[in-house]
Length: 257
Image 1 (cartoon, rainbow, N blue to C red):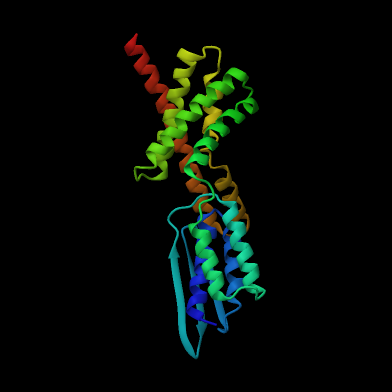
Image 2: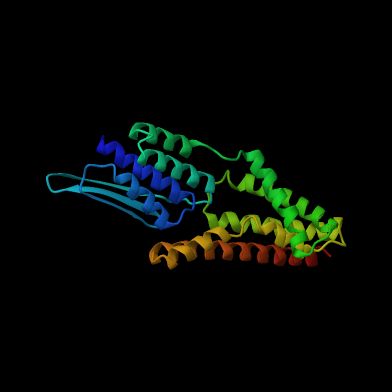
């Protein structure tokens, strides 16, 4: 067994899972199972909200330690499932460490959805959440227009390297402005509130908040608190963006008239 390559493989598996929104206990469990293939008597894996550490220790040999920082996180259950499948095959000797490493590299490089599908997804979420919040056909049509502006705003803002707070605030600002314009000039009978609420659902960090609760209940207080704070910051960004958009439109319309 190439111990160094095993360490790299385990760290890569943990990094992909952590970056894809997996719970800390699940990340650590996967890494520990994979480390059992090592000949070292002591194998430890520790995951935090923004990074992980993997160590192999033996009194008769040099200690091997790897640290990986995970600055960006999202929600990708497909990647988590794929990494778990690689881990199971590796632990049951169906894959060599070289093959497992290569499969993990392929998983890391793979893109589940293209920009076109993401574009359509943002519009679809806006449209089909409208009936859930009591909207009718006009509200769904208005939400489609607002979702289109959201998709264009997301495409534009991702070309500029900004942090998540400003990205979510900008997209929420665009949602509020576009919903108000649609309500004012195109669909007076539609509800601006329904269009705004249904459109921001694609930005709401519900999965991240749920994951943070699970981490806290499992005793991973540092990671759970970090994830919860991240979800709260995103929620505040959404609220600030929508509020600023509504206030800005009100001031502009009063000045215009």
